[in-house]
Image (cartoon, rainbow, N blue to C red):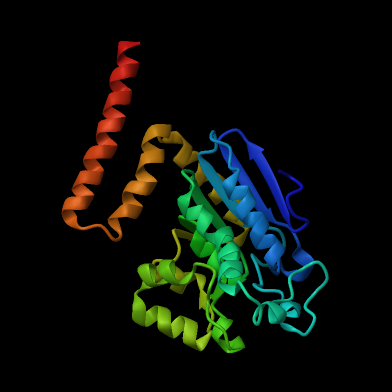
Length: 257
């Protein structure tokens, strides 16, 4: 899995899989081939992985879409975005790109994004694809798509509206302004904000705390709480009962030896 894409490094260490954006000269700018690689990593996630960490090398988490993709002819080795715009199957093509982001909400592992510097456009949306976000105090989040005559389309709009509300999400996306780490914390976008030099250690501490939770409970919590976002009260109570019943049965089986 380590050679899944030139711009990604994947390291699997027992219950933790670390996915590192690894093209710092481009500020980890993203391309369609990278999105497809992200989907492949998520779809082949080993069953023993309980926590996924998404991080990046260099000063920035990700500068977002590589702008060369929007020029005539695009860039070597990548789909010609402007040509795709007038081709058959555009909806299906975009759905494939979205999979690289949506997959992280559907995997059973808890996904942690460790974000430093700029997370722009697709970079911001990748951070939003995680369950938890640790931000360095120099983090700057920005949805820049509208300024390019586009909209965010990589799965970021749903989590953003859920976290900050419709009006604030509209303002952030429509103006393309930067949201600093402290404001992100105030808005609920950040699980925590730490000094830049402490980001790696804070991520390790969070991972350790997650792994200290029994594996069955951690695996049950993610879908249970995600269900609560849209479920009615009765449906959520039923989901709680079902999850608890499964865990109680597992406890009883272990007690019987």
